[in-house]
Length: 229
Length: 339
Image (cartoon, rainbow over all chains, first blue to last red; front, side, top):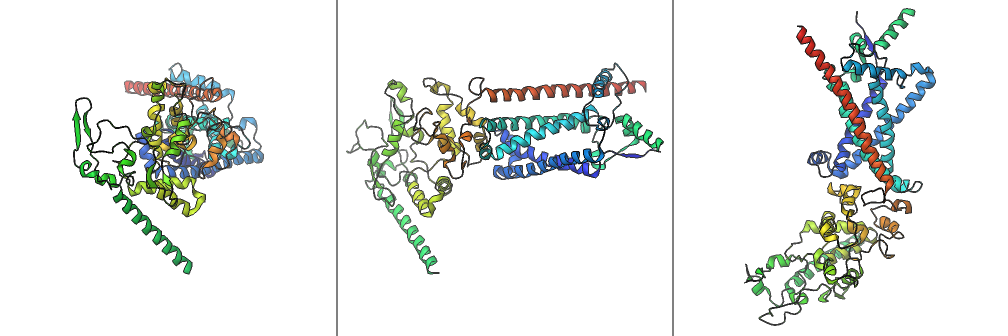
């Protein structure tokens, strides 16, 4: 009998939604200023109600995203304190096995092996996604706040910080957008094995077959635990 | 109650006064009847050297123009006889004309502006050759002779918004004075036009090469937030003149310059809606130049760091995606072959 396995709790799914909705709004209201002569972004800008409104919307969405990220940090700390997981139970940390998985996957891609790497709860692909957002949040929120309050920031930091923030905010935004559109969208949408979408962000569960294909080690562990009970 | 009535009637009287004042002076402007000939359509001459020269001044356009209150000979001073002399001098803006400043009753001229211009970076420099000095913009280069440009109500309205940026604290009286005095001559241009005007020289390598001026300033401005936001229609950002002043534009090493090291903080915070309470650290941020390893190494390397980081990351991710896709194509192809 096949059964469903919970992958993301309601809390985690909401964290994802409160991250990607502001992300889309931030892209739509920010990129028209990064590319002030682009016709495409002109259409987006007028849809957002012109630059005056777009700036307000941008800051509102940024506020929500920062709150969401702060909540996530607290959530991680709360779970660390409450559950006191061992290192091997912190599945998002990069490990030696990720390196081995990458090599095995490359062999598989090149038809040097017919065996796919067996992933645990998070593959190196998913870990990369997670830590990319982590790094991106610090860069974007940090530089964004500097640009939001440049005069106040300059009372305690040198002026070059404002210039660095200006470059970093614009360039990291590009990096983040490309990473999402190319990497994240391929892995959860455009990958022909996944197309049209991996619905786990909404449903929160994976079927046994999906678990067997994507997270066999985790499935093994879950089953082993059940037997010992 | 009585004060509101009083205020209202004051406004009414003021408005009536302004209306009549303008309509009277508009009629006075052609007191010498120049339009008898110059108002004729296609009025002009054809010479072998200059080709067609138009002398037509449509009275309708003139009535709505910047200089509608000024009689022709106030500026065209050497046209004193009829028929007019063949060679006449070019108009000089610093000449006093016969109109008075509204509410001030003093004579009006552009002398103040001309004097500021003369000592500015755009004025004549005795060390330069005549040719080099001639390359500087004179009054008319920036203030194009605009008697054919009609001043429309919506332009006036927008311009008075521009005035309010600086004159917020001076109250309504100040605004009325300002708008009414500006309505007599050319009003503040939209910021986009200011940038375009300054760029017409400062972004032109052939015009700038004889001067010791950094050519990257316009491109640098357009890379920064002020320039980008302006292109997207955010009118409140600084245009060239907001920081460099209009007539008294001086190089940064001049102690009187608005962008001198000691004055720049004041310049950033001077406009009510700009960076109020700007600190000295805030004001040193380079807002223009293209970063190089020499003038701004930190920003130069941050920019390149991001380019390399982005290109490198994308190359790796793309390679991974292509390989992954390739394996899927191979698998699908083999499965079909087996069938």
